[in-house]
Length: 560
Image (cartoon, helix red, strand yellow):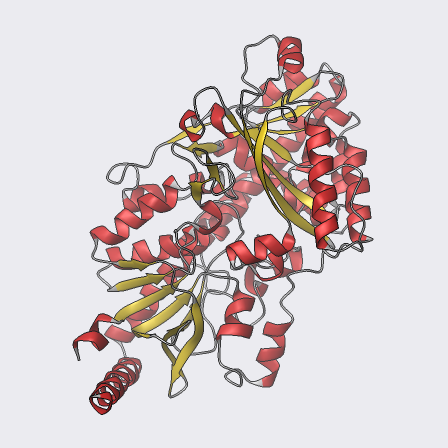
């Protein structure tokens, strides 16, 4: 029975992205025996930091994500002792974003809205006042909405509800303005408030969640409130330092992590999810539950055995949107043999800011609108709006002395290009580099190697169905109790023993950890009810585990 026991845990977590690891850390801290299984050779998922090999030995890259914002709104760091015990370090980047204009001017988005407004007056005095007005509305929305993001959307914690209600009472004068803003499209909200391209452009380039003209897409501007109140940080040692600290927390509580262990399917015993089967046939069993942190659509349509869900529920799972927006994400890393410079823009500013440090946008507002329309038509846009960053401005050890890494992310590329993916990716990369070279001098002449990831590459590398970094299209109809779908929200599923977390669950994607924290709290609450209430669930779980272990013991003896 020894081998069977070793392959058994209280909870199995599928996926070692940061949300899966956050859940696992909370569960292990609560005294549960936790086993995390990850398909890739390294942990972190889209927060991975790994060597830039084989393309550029000696260089290191943040494979997908870059800045942490919503993570700073949570208690995860304090709860798990990530900074105090496990070496996590972060620094707030201010300004976190800068809009670079073609003529050498720029607008920095500072943490202090007044400082941003002071810069904006150069371009438009009326826009400066409008920005401060918008911030008052958005700050109120953050105070009301954030508590509800940090709890279950279907059975919210009463403390969170009371905190949100307190925020509503405090900001009651702004409620009508919040309603008008959130009901509008993103383009409408931007154009109603601002006339200058300097502020219009970054508010589309950095936030392409929904089509810009879609009703209710104005909510995306809420990011400004998070930027202002909590700041945007970077982790020392790359984004991978975050999952590394989480792994240390898990291991310190006797949790286990297995990499290079892709899950082929979920295992069911008497209608209950009781474990996972890895590619190659190895089976691992869970006494209490299995929590998947991969795309919920992957879990419900690929890992869950066919016929498990009733027809109506299976239809809901099948229809989870992952590729309906018409736009898709793209990621580029370039290893450089020297330092890229931004002399023209830094000279104009004259304030000593290292413009390589933040995530910078450098396309116009109209170019963003045109790019979205072209992408939806299946065309590669003439310009690819996105965010550029010299990773080595912060983590200098990521490249040999005197060399740089250029990081670029775009959220506006076609999800179904007419020319096919090979040609589309080639065109996208060429156009990104061409545009970026005007702002980052040396990016073309110093290139050593590049790694560009379009939709199919993101799907393969990060096990993200349809290459969606959000796991579920970030449209307003898929938030709260409808995320990822009706009957599957709140981290529970209709299948006993199966829970969901990750970017495709409430509240949002990005480096936040909130889905992982919320899911762990729900699971621990459920386990306490099972342990302190009726014995039915415990008996079922124990019977399933005993049956599994007995069957494995019988098979082992038969083999002998």
